[in-house]
Image (cartoon, rainbow, N blue to C red):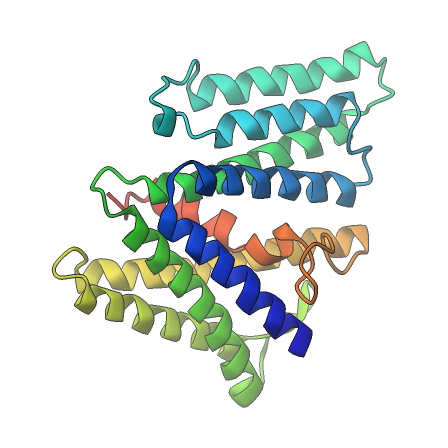
Length: 265
């Protein structure tokens, strides 16, 4: 627990500091996290991490996560075109390799590319919202996600009796999940009162619920596929926390979701 706490404070502080500064270094950090996350995903699926098919995935993650707007560069292709093109390239690998690389393997590599690439790209987009308050929105969503984790943990420890999804994550409880939702909403509403009119209470409630529910579901998704592959952590980069995907599984589910719902400017 001590190691986990120390790592969390140091890593969290460095990340928030970089987020506060913004600019090129922050976006390079997010892109680097995305590439490490994709590497962890590929390793979990037991596919060679630096051979031909996986290289396609890294290129896709770079394209999706590159901060085009920051450098005032128009994206050559839209998301739909890029996703279709990479799908075709991954499928072509099965033909070129004469099925030595199976359809199941390229399907997992493609899913990982979309899951990780779009997830981290949405974090970048949040920092660059058109209203110029990207730092506020990023801190709000991180605070809601982290408070959901804390609320779920402490409510589960104190009141947890009914298992939430024992086949996937045996320690999570319904009471813990509800505690996470409640604390996330409270934190989001506090941000609303401190925003000077930038964020309404109604929207804060929606953002808090989204962060808690989708974030907890993102955590369950990570638990589900780790259970399939029989591993505890996606990586060892963060002592006491595991890998990038272990730490950011909620983030890469929540940030795209709130953009899809247009809950942010």
